[in-house]
Image (cartoon, rainbow, N blue to C red; front, side):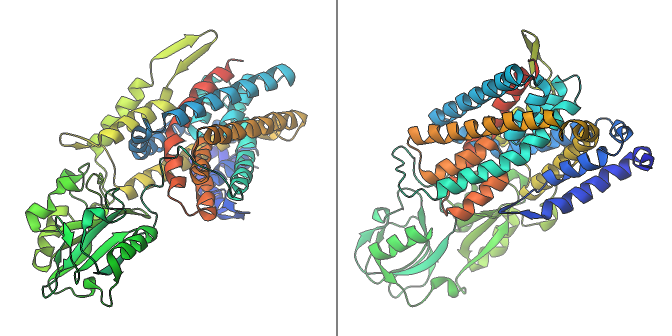
Amino acid sequence: MWQFFADNPWVTLFAVIALGSLLGLARLGPVRLGAAGVLFAGLLVGALDPDIGRAVPAGVSVLGLALYVYTVGLESGPAFFRELRPQLAVMAGAVIALVVTAVAVGLLGNKVFGISGPYLAGGYAGIGTTTPGLAAAQAASSDPAQPAVGYAIGYPLAVVVTILFVAGLATVRSWPGRRDPGEDLPRRLVTVTVAVRDDLRWAEVPGVAQGRLLASVVRRPGGTPEVAHHLDRLTPGDLVVVVGGPDQVAAAVTALGEKAGEHLLDRRDLVDYRRVLLTNPDLAGRTVAELGLEERFGALVSRVRRGDQELLARADLLLQLDDRVRVVMPRERSAEVGAFLGDTEAKVSEVSAVSLGIGLALGFLIGIPSLTVGATTLSLGPAAGPLVMAMVLGRLRRTGPLVWTLPTRANLTLRQIGLLLFLACVGLTSGYAFRRNAFSLFGLKLLVVLLIGALLSYALMVLVARLLGQSRPRTMGLLAGYVGNPAITAYANTRVSDARVNTGYSTLFALAILVKIVCIQLIVGL
């Protein structure tokens, strides 16, 4: 009856992707399954007949995984290296917590419950919600279906338990972050015209020295609006447009005078502003200062919109393709600025086949070497090799004419395609084994082991952050990155409005994946 699915594997594969994506849209409490819905749809279809899993086209899973981890590495690499020094203690603590959890899951599951290493390795990947970890467990196992069973049990457990941890953290009122480096750039930007009351140097305004506030337009008494280049001293009667987070702008208004009755940006006959799409590949990987807009056009960048994130245009902010740059400029130079930055919608989804091909090839190459430790063989493999290489290339951003980074939209598209292909293949090839093992006494034992492991793991991470003096918002982000699930980050952002949630997530996300991959390969050897 089910032979049709085995005889037409491509139809089955994409039907599973469609069905799983619909399942992922269903809301389960505060979160959705998202792409993980494809895994469960694949398990459902694969459980119908063992021939369905055997018919899955070879190589599709590896290709999907490589696209996923490579695009993740390109995006998370810069954040990882940027946070390496200031957050080194937190990173070390997270590594220790992951290793302790791996030891606990391995010993408890194998010595107490008699569960074999591949099942435990997949379960460890599941409570870490790490798709590359699942691939590493399957590559190291004689039966790839066994890790998938553990992963399918551990994944939903991880999402539920982590959400409960984040919800608990959100209710804690007193949580001193004595060593927290402070909130990064604000999540939301506002623009206000301020009427200056007192004689004051711009550098003395709160937030300016810290790069959290900038001026875009200024008008002197009796003068006309002009771009605020090299703003120094402000005098009574000046009008200045300030840009920053709501709190920073409010503090600036108090320090400077009061909110003006007119907004300088409403008048656009002399000074204009607009968002320009950065599609010129020669400018990717440059800082705002390196654009040289002031020297070329007398213009100034005030904001950069990257995906859904609004960034204040500090001089050292690195730009990437597909950024929407808000430029304040003399009206007559508007066309020149647009031509210089690119501003071509057709290029926002273009991918450099040269840089993508070279990057993936190098990633697969560094994944080949292996190290034998006892009965276990360790290697980066196709899961971690492309990830590590992409992190390095994402940090470099460009090498001569080669731009390693991808436009944001292209990156997210390739990432989604890769993840869906991989999860669909895993579900289909493991569905029959999941049917035989998950709903049994064995499955219950594995669930108990993974629940204990999850509670231990997340509690250790919160304890590490607390002992190292991290703030409550950053701890929530660190926990989300430690587990590695964006749904948890989204939930944390609904509970706390603080940019440290996202920076905490970026700090540990890539590092946690790499550590989990190593631990998973060791667990398989039990």
